[in-house]
Image 1 (cartoon, rainbow, N blue to C red):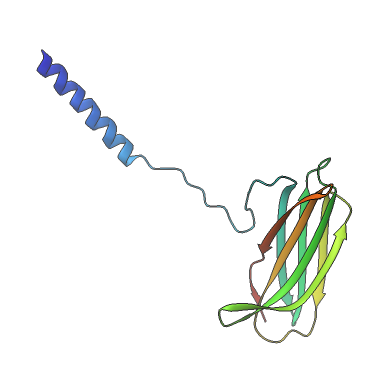
Image 2: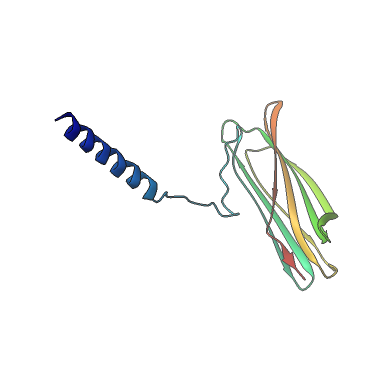
Length: 141
């Protein structure tokens, strides 16, 4: 009787382990446009770059938390690829005394190459702040 129970338990354990080993996990990889990270004063941040006729349009959007975020300072840098590194091509900074900010800039007469926009946002709650840095997808001309 003990041998039968022992055999049944062994079979159940083997079956459970094999089911676990073959279970397919449900993994979701976030896209570059929808990265969700836990911040104290920031709900969402995004940066985009579009290039047409050797002119770049840069856009940074920062959504803080209404009632929590008091100020947003955005530094937007258009960067050009040089080998394996990125060099500053042009830069702008603006302060928004709000919990929400949309900052757009343009640069004309670009030289040929690959570009991206670096967005650095300082998101404030009174005198406390968090700094978030993101990069747009690349674009070429």
